[in-house]
Length: 264
Ligand SMILES: N[C@@H](CCC[C@H](N)C(=O)O)C(=O)O
Image (cartoon, rainbow, N blue to C red):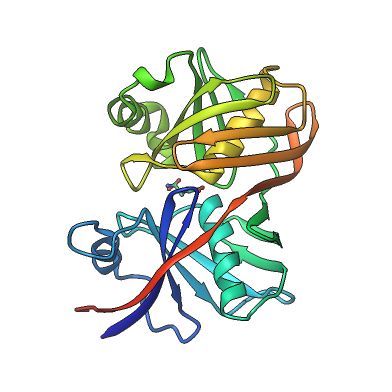
């Protein structure tokens, strides 16, 4: 089978994007999706995203997200911004989008090079001994440090991701964070399903912004995040540790397109 695809990146978090409105690509083919995401044997990406026909009334499309390991997973914030850019490219939307992903309904707005995505509400930030845990559409463990560049992200991240603490939820993503000033943080993320550090994680920086606010490290409701792949911003309304109207903003870019021969 020949598969047409597009490659997108959002602050260096990269995705294979497939227009699957004709259901050409089966969602159960874990090996194929894993192979397509492989950086040596395939196209190479942190994940693969299907744009499908909407199921809910008023939606423009449906988003289905797979990690590089080939498994369908929870919400991807950078992928959500990239699929909005893809939908605009395909002519499905103009400057605004409404779509459903695994964690529910999302809205998005395109403003020149920046795409803002409305994230799921967050009702709980769990404070642990030296870290925080919250779910921003995907599960995130957040650790504040003052030596972020000295951490072996893959080693320490994997130890937490596979720890007994997170077994019952299928593991977690792990974010290491260093405060830069009153409103900015440097973030490095170990991503579940990629099983390595990625250049950026959208649900991850969202978790960092909310955890920083809950911990009293910032008192503004817009937080700036510097990742190895670029800059993102998160804004929100807060009531104690309950967060609403959460928006993730940053660039999303089409890198190339192609056709690949897939053995099913
Ligand atoms: N890169 C993503 C997060 C993707 C999901 C994650 N790897 C998981 O399985 O929890 C983002 O930008 O949010």
